[in-house]
Amino acid sequence: MKSLLLAIALTALLVPATRAGQAAPAPASTSSTTSATAPAATRHALLWKVSDADSAVYLLGAFHLLKQDDYPLPAEVDRAFDDSAALLFEVDPAAMTAPETVVAMQKYMGYDNGKTLSTVLPKATLDKLGTLLSASGGTLQAVEHSEPWAVNLGLLLGVTQAMGFRPELGLDRQLMERAGKAGKPAAGLETIDEQLQAMDSAPYAEQAQGLEEFLDDPRKAVRQLQDMHDWWRAGDVTRLDTDMRAEMARKTPESYRLLDVARNDAWLPKVEKRLAEDRKTNTLVVVGALHLLGSDGLVEKLRARGYRVERVCDGCAAP
Image (cartoon, rainbow, N blue to C red; front, side):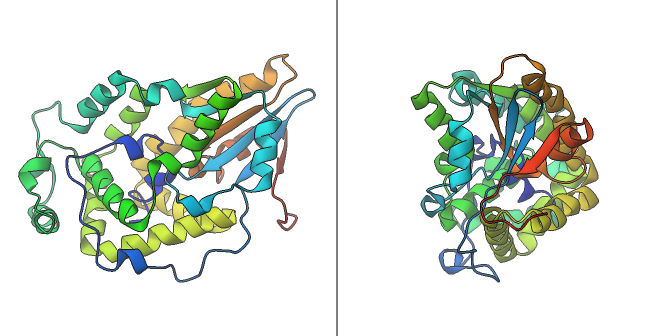
């Protein structure tokens, strides 16, 4: 489960806006479920400062669905925002509410090759999905023309909503709104179509794997999502990298390449351009947290280019 379905919450900004026709019923006891370890009392940002001679780029790892008690943000995030003249997000904030975005989502969530959900999923998986949907009055027919990844996202949204997570509280959404109020220019690293294409291109086998794991144990997904959220709140790079990014790379390698590695490679020159331009101003880059981790992440890629890279984390132990 952690390899794909939950990892998407840290890689794709459009996840909260994507609907697969029906949300899954929440597993029993969702509202009272807690992780094996309580959330850390002290919160730390996943924030790095990348500098050249005259400017800097701040890299901030986001969680795309958050709760009200995740705010206020750590002080270092506020300082990075105040120190930046402009912001870069995964997609242009203006595109998030554009009518054509809904059209694009509907296109990519469906099939263009004559297939249906029944033809790409094993019968056992379909039967389990039908049982889960029927618990909330839904039917398989309602999702028959949705690709597995889109159904996966419907399940994810059903669980996160029941747990109190809200897309409008996601770190990116909040900073988009804040940038607009402050009059700071904001742009995107990719288009809506590029992000949806990455999700849509994942192999059916890997899409089905994530769905099967969720259906086998929905409560486990709740526990894992809570753990992932706790690690993000604590700024725990090691747990997120080991238990999320590396596991995704191992269990669903092509999905990992499409959703993480290829997009990082496409974004790198756009981020680096902010440092190369003789503007003597700083930029805050806000992307899903997994995009910053490991050897495939933006942090290490920029470090390898020779830039000065430092973690910005009040109270964190020195590396």
